[in-house]
Amino acid sequence: MKYKACIFDLDGVIVDTAVYHYKAWKRLANEMGFDFTEHQNEQLKGVSRMASLELILGWGQVTGATEAEKEEMATRKNLWYTDMINQMTPDEILSGAREFVQACRDAGIKTAIGSASKNTPIILAKLQLTQLFDAIVDGNSVSKAKPNPEVFLKGAEALGVSPADCVVFEDAVAGIEAALNAGMKAVGIGTPKMLTEADVVVSGLDKFTLEMLEEL
Ligand code: G6P
Ligand code: MG
Image (tube, rainbow, N blue to C red; front, side, top):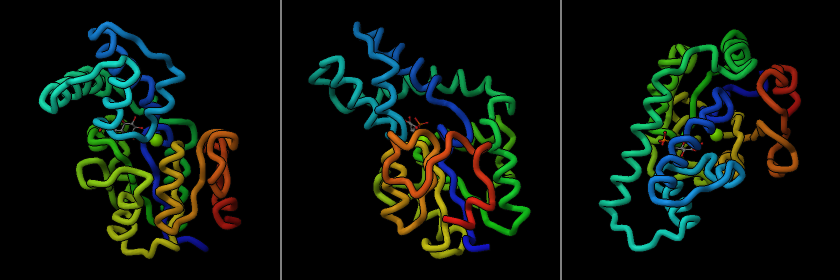
């Protein structure tokens, strides 16, 4: 095989958690007396928890919150979010995701998760996917957010492969940038209009094959 490893973003690639993030952030915003749209929520994809909060507070023109207050808000949101995440079942794995990761493994290609989410371990457990990955790098082990390449470079390191031998699967613009900044190929999950920098874009892992990986 041309590539030795595939590194997958979690939210939006393996599972659609954006809807749960949206519900929980919306509840927080509503409690503070404002609202934001699903369209605005698009801008939160791939963005860390605290950076998401900053964007939302900006939309609501909430100023002057202390760091401690912001921490409390993020914790409150995360409790609502994890309540929903805890109800997730393997049915929610996006179409073709499990099959493609398994196909990689069967072909001798290493697999890793590279996600900004601190909830990665619980989500993978609920989806019964933990065993499918040789390495898991998430928001608990990185300090620099995408588009910084740290999460993917750590993934390559954990797998013992060089960045040039890795392909990243990402649904967020910042994630595609992070992959390219790491010196890796980037497969966009979404639309070519949004993910203009990706080497190739497909609507989901059900539309991607090992043959397409070889052609990158
Ligand atoms: C992913 C999602 C973001 C989320 C971030 C942190 O990148 O796309 O929407 O804000 O993870 O998630 P967490 O579970 O740590 O709050
Ligand atoms: Mg994502």
